[in-house]
Image (cartoon, rainbow, N blue to C red; front, side, top):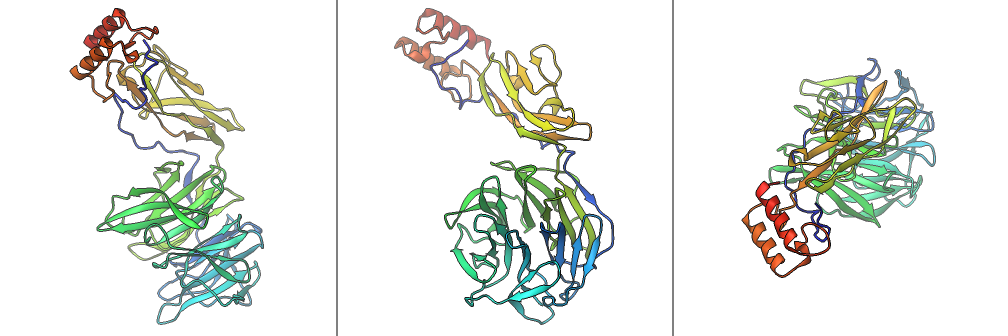
Amino acid sequence: MTRATRNVATTVLMLAALPALAQSTCVQWEQKATGGPPSIYCHAGVYDAWRGVTVLFGGNNGCSVGGTYEWNGAGWIRVQPSVSPSSRSSFDMAFDLNRGVTVLFGGNADCGGPTYRDTWEYNGVDWTRIMSTNGLAPPAQGTMCFDPVRNQVVLAVCCGFRQTWAWDGSAWSLITSGAPYPAEGGSIVFDEDAGVLRLFAQVRRGSEWFGQLLSLVNGVWQLDHEFNANRSYWIESEVIYSPVRRSLIRYDRNIHSVSETYEWTGTDWVRLTTTEPPNRVCTFFEYDTNRNVAVMFGGHDEIGLRSDTWELRLGSAVTVDSHPQDRSLLAGATASFEVSASATETITYRWRRNGTALVNGGRVSGATSSRLQIRGIEPSDAGLYDVLVSVPSCSEVSRGARLNVICPTDFNLDGTVDFFDYLDFASAYATEDGTADFSGDGQVDFFDYLDFVTAFDAGC
């Protein structure tokens, strides 16, 4: 039974609550070999894409420290430059892909020392202090990344200044001032998929904290997404871009209770893993484009300082290229969901509803293929559908797609089948309105009335 003349897309008879995201086994945190830098926090790290190493500098172990280290995926190497920046903590670095140097700005000396506003560059051998040719510099340290559109390093200033600056290798320039809301802390990254700079920040309103994702468009930060973190305390967040997954990856942490990894789907953040490193703050989270991993070292937990190295494996043996899409269909229709995936190994599929595996038989077919079909859908079929896409080494989980089952006798589209639907249908039928063509045969007649009453009495 169809009713093509009515728009039914917004009426939901039944929408199951969203279950927790099933986790990918192709994305995993792994603790690496011990040794390397001392136990420190509030240091900075950045991936040197020209030389294939992660560079670490500075930090704090009671007072600020110096020291340059490099991580090659197997171990840390202490580098001995002839010139280095002063010992410092609470700063950031970015790698200039255009010029092949690590850029460092600002930081705190602590232990009674000054707050720095100097700029340094590291070429893999030595550090060099660069004096801005125009005499300008950001008012404070902040979060940094490389912008391949500008071919410059960009810094979003922290501490309430709400300014964004760019470094071209010789001078700093202010590119924008202000933001939609006063943010406290943040992490800037270039989103290659969207082609824009993104800033993840946190905002406090009263006793509640909110997470925000912003984009820099035409020199103005625009708010793309906001969510209530449902926490009464601040957490440290850092965002990277994974070209393999074509998405933003966010790592949240604090001293007491939070160590969580999320992925940006384009509309929302979803939990990516359930097993993460121990809680900590004041560390770094940087993406190694050569090995498709994110690297993290050290930090501060509720007991003291840490000196452990972790990697988040993001390179996937199987990639979900297109995900299933939401469906809103009348009861009795056929629901279809499709997924597209690629891999170098043989792929297997397992479709699930609300986290429970589906089995072929009866009205269900394609439960172990790339295309799932459910014939003659019923209200009990509504829910969240995803598919486990597997190769022998690991599995990926697609994004979930909602199936909304619409009752054909919900005539007024309010989500409930009741006597008002009968009255509204009777009124439309009496005036021979096209919406009363319940049988979908192109005309309003007594058979539409009989069909509607029969369906109404039977329920959905």
